[in-house]
Amino acid sequence: MRSPSAPEPSAIGSDLALGVRSEPVTRRRGLAGSAWEPYLYLLPALLIFTLFVAVPVVGTVGLSLAHWDGIAWSSASFAGWHNYTRALTEGEFWRSIWHNIQLVPFFVILPAILGLIPAAIVHQVRLKGTPVFRAGLFLPYIMPGVLIGVVWRWLLNPVFGLINSSLKKLGFQPPTWLGDFTWALPTVGLIGAWAAYGFCFVVFLAGMQKISQDLYEAARLDGANTWQEFFAVTLPGLRREMAVVLSVNLINALRAFDVIKATTDGGPGKQTEVVALYMINVFEARQVGYGAAIAVLLAVTTLALSLLVLRLFGERE
Amino acid sequence: MIKRSLIYLLLAIGVVIAVAPFVVTILSSLKTSIELVTGVFALPKDAQWQNYRTAWVDGHFDRLFLNSLVVAIGVVVPSIFLSAMTGYAFARFRFRGSNALFAYLLFGLIVPLQALVIPLFYLMRSLHLLDSLWALILPQIGLSLSFGTLLMREAFRTIPREIVEASIVDGASSWKTLWGIMFPLSRPIVGTLALMFFIWTWNEFLLPLIVNIDPKYQTLPVGLLYFQQRWTSNVPVIAAGSTIIFLPLTIVFLLFQRQLIRGITSGAVKG
Image (tube, rainbow over all chains, first blue to last red; front, side):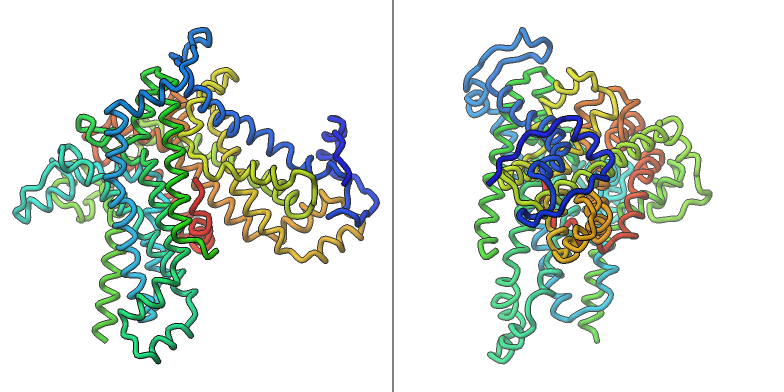
């Protein structure tokens, strides 16, 4: 194998800018061209990716091992594992994690169920007009979290919001939802479930339509009823979709930020302060190293858990 | 058949719950504050277009909108361009280190923005790019490249080899083959990719929140947050501001529904 030689910088420029160089066809390699040609195609992307993604990631790890107020480099000092031990021994960090864990049923399980059951019914009776339903159901999923938060915040406003004024007309005494110590977190969770169930529906329905009809016919010949069909054919056929839905929802639960920033900003008190929000608050309080350590812990946990979900459901791929 | 209509009803309820908040928002954006309390689903008596004027002029949504548009274009166009180049390199060349470089670029798929946003702030500060649209554009190009590379590589791999070889025999350079043949042949995937880049960029919130403090360089999501804090009790104006954000998104979504849903559901694992 030939080793690639470093190209002249000027050659890179003219080559890419003009793009008119013609050269003899060589069939030894994957394509015509000299050995360094693929590297030229990669170079600009690699530069941007390295500078604005890879270097900051390394930077986060580096900062997590330091004490720094974020002002002058001279004020930074090596902290060792201190920021990590602080996070793991400090109640505030665990409290914020606990809030994320409490969001999991709402962000992960509830929308999966709310998507799966209607999808199974629609699939079973082969309903027409699903593109219209699909568009409507999917709409919240593409909206920015802040917008969702702002809209729900006034819908849930205890004084003039749609929800409470309707409930009061019906004779209920509704709580203040986002302002209530017990209700704030479940309410944020329900908003998350609302934003995700249409996505789950669309993914599951698409998955079901890929399952071979032969399997259903075979099940019917064996005398399976609708329920048995669902558990014996539909559900096992959705392994991949299940992996996607659960891991995406789980990632959203662990990284939850936008909706919460716009609805409660962590309140009332610290009742809805999730890890991502805690991290930003710590960073804004100029405890840069500690914030970075939380970022690392968040990234590693998210990665480990989503790999676990993919491993559990997606191993057939 | 009763069963069928019941199922339709169930689905319709699901759709109404998903869409109603947006419909209510549009309705409210055209009302007076008093109308808002009297009937939530009622149509406004006289459409209060000045709510939009307030948001657009006093709330500076004109500038926010323009910034969002500039950042979206500034991210989508170069990201497509660069993703085509990297996808092409990995799909059509065999070279030393290709697997390692591919894995390196794909690493961006699993890194959450939270894991890089703190150093990004200091990086932008040392580049003197804080409070500029560059601080939003450059990192988001970098973050787009992972998914873009993956998708474009797949797209180029499905193009029959003979087409590429014919072009080379004709004497076209690899550069010309990419832009003259491969790229146009992959238009559907390029379209899907562009839409997804657009939505990710349009919706991005954490990055602008951290790197841009001056509201002059803010985009719509953060702008809406500040706007909400300032106009807390004036719901019609907040609703108008919200509508300015979600209406373009809804139109794009409805126009390109198929590609978008396919793209998002296939690329859902992206961070």
